[in-house]
Image (cartoon, rainbow, N blue to C red; front, side, top):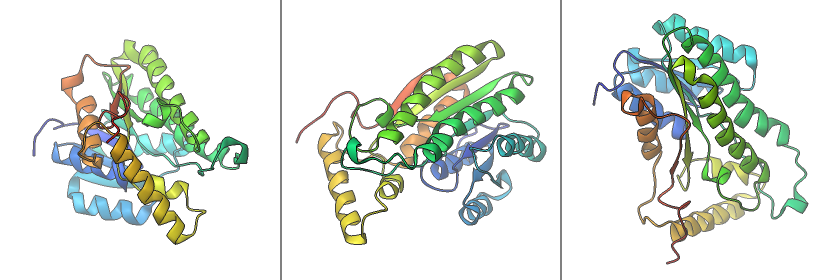
Length: 264
């Protein structure tokens, strides 16, 4: 345990599972007080209870502007301020064999959560931070927003938009001493891959996910598989004072996948 975030207050959206869960735990271990923001109240409350007095749960739909404003107000009321905002909440789009088969039925919701949610979270956090000496905002994208590819077109588009929005927000908010950076995870085992193929039967889904994971391992330069904790360490870096002169940066956490393919 370190005290790198001692005295800091953070909000982590999508904080009850996956990358958000690991980030909440890492921030608490580093001394922060954290608001876990999520729609999954059961998991969120369980995590808050496990973290003790340093965490609170708040139920929120990140695509709702009023709920996001209320979330920031909740953090300030509960813990006395807000220094770190992690816009992590995200959902997958349905995976199709090719774009011709994509009905785009989930376009609105995916964009609302993955892009609008990040924009609302950034704006609402910055409205507080701008009058409180600044702060750090960390947005969660994906290597799917960096590398072109097939199947989950809406998801890729939403994550690419997050990358560009992050850089724009960094330019716009720099005069308030608000740093805005972006993490682009890749090949990290989380439930999001499974959720993109939920239309498949159980056996077919399991086989597909297994094959995809194996391809990722084959293509990745580093042989070690990444973990949510690896992403949480990157979030800690951006949240703390070690990155006090860093803004507008996109950091892939992907075992080198964006750098190039290592065929084994």
